[in-house]
Structure formats: C-alpha cells, structure tokens
Length: 30
Image 1: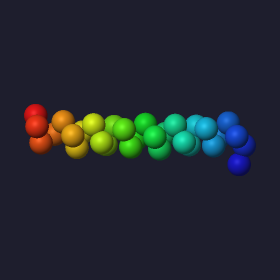
Image 2: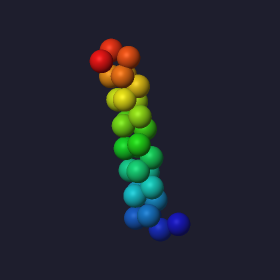
Image 3: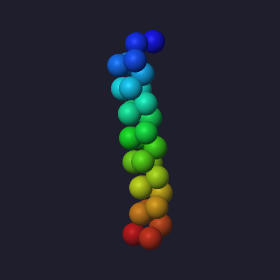
Image 4: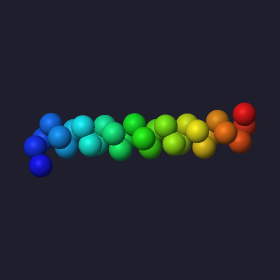
C-alpha cells in the first residue's frame, strides 16, 4: 500500500471516528 494512500485511509478513519464521537457526545446533551 502506498504511503499516500495509507495517509488518506488513516485520515478517513480518524475523521469518521471524530465525527461519530462528536455526535455521540452532543446527541444526549442536545
């Protein structure tokens, strides 16, 4: 796997995790 592709995959996974976490954190509290 090329390093550039690995970086894109890591960014996508990290961004998705942050988005999901922010939704879970802000959801219950409104």
